[in-house]
Figure 1 (cartoon, rainbow over the protein chains, first blue to last red):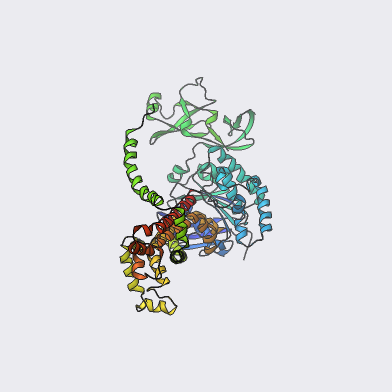
Figure 2 (cartoon, rainbow over the protein chains, first blue to last red):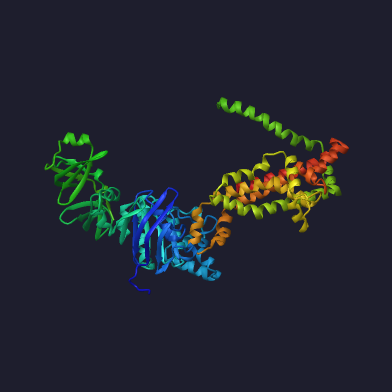
Length: 355
Length: 256
């Protein structure tokens, strides 16, 4: 029986070995309307996982249930899945509008109907000025939008995005993240988004799964997993240290004052309201005195732990919030740092990612 | 003064030798004849018939290579199977043997009293001294060229395009005809032209399998042997012109 509460997609003990990639006994549930992020390092099998769900490969064992139907061995054309591969794979021999309309044309829609629907989705996605263009003339961000339109026009049950932002420059990446959030509000699709970037996971994901070596190691809310990784392995490649929730309380031009729950910092962002803040451990400088330096943020704290993190030394510093700082062995010896010592953490407003 | 690098100077001089060696024969033939003689050659009924026979037989051989070679090329490009490399190598053997040898192989296998030839003759295909013999001999020596051209064309089409087309609702066949084939189109077309040109240029195999009906390359030999060099010149110039047109067309297609 179809119920609203049943998960949209269920993977039951799915295993597959293909070339050098592997999926090992994966169990996964994606809820209706959910934006689900799969995060893992290169070679973890993320793309293969998407291709199994799309039907491009069939599993060696296990079951895939989509919308209460067993689709394990159904060919891709009968699954109703939107797939946006890493390189977007826009058909180079067709105009943008023919790319977007491809799925409907294949379904035998009349020419007028295809044109009408292409217009409609292009307006919604803000790409109707691109329709007559050749694919080869599009920028990365434009290609991404067209690929999304082509996948979404068939009203797929689920949208699969394979590292959708990795080919873009950092600015476009942020723009497309916001864009995905916007079109989600309009089109309300369910999606699986594969990435190795924790910023995407936290910013976009309702829930996320961490994948390593073909196995799912942890599933949960992104911020939960990143702040409480189940083991060292997960911690090592979710890679997010110094990730905090905060709120913009004041701003002066490009500069925002952000309250992280007692600790206040300044960051370069145009965002307002609730935000996430990440500071890379290697971008924090340790000072012994509260010196006058150019860094906008200087926090006082006490060293709680010193450990090896080749090629760095890792410090845990309590500065009202738990900070992780990486420094070189030379710096550690020069500053004569020990556990319990009082230090100052300095970092620039521009070294902070806000999202 | 601009300095000419020694390496390029030396290499250009050496390169000129081969340019001269290849271009001289092609140029000289046009000084030995004139447009009127070439025009007369085009009015010669025997030449016209031979040209017609050669071009249509080459077209049929090419068409057969297209119809049966394209699917093979696609399978070779996309699937791995046992002995695939061996099969691919064997498909290229016709390019590595003397054409007279190719002719003997074809004749042995397909002549009307052979077991395969007997079946073929029941559907009206007899190879000895027949138009079909020319087609089969041409196919044997030229199809490998089409297959490798189409195969490399398909290999260059990123499979991801096909994956996306499938998820968008296109079945295997629709995906092949709407995405794969158009993207491999250039390789297919240049494969067709080179295969056709190779078939037209065949002599050795035709001499053994089907000297009659007379094909154009055999007619050139016949004229040369019966009437001497000068009698073969207009028809030679004509065939060279056709060859130049084919190569330039090919070049134009691959530049686009």
